[in-house]
Image (cartoon, rainbow, N blue to C red; front, side, top):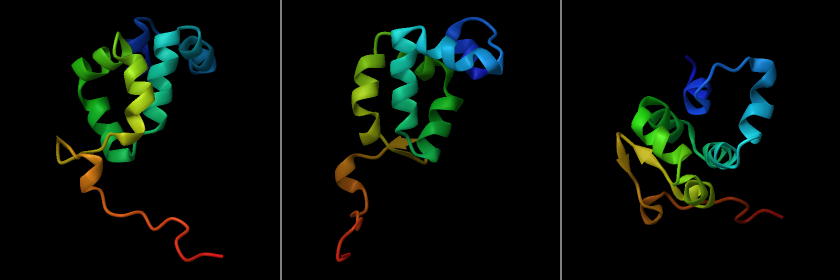
Length: 93
């Protein structure tokens, strides 16, 4: 079963996936949180079934709110203070 199929507890055709995800509030919140993750953090979540189940359950609202502040590197959570400084738009006109 695919990862979304595991989360939704049923097989879902690709053509029905969007509707299936957004038919359930917690799954929609999980999707929102996952969209905020970088590739390495997303892969970590994909590789850890128990974590996915927890994020898809009662932790979905908190995950959706704060996922953009979550980064995993080499299997460890990296706090935002340790991230390299962002130079987005600095010095641009």
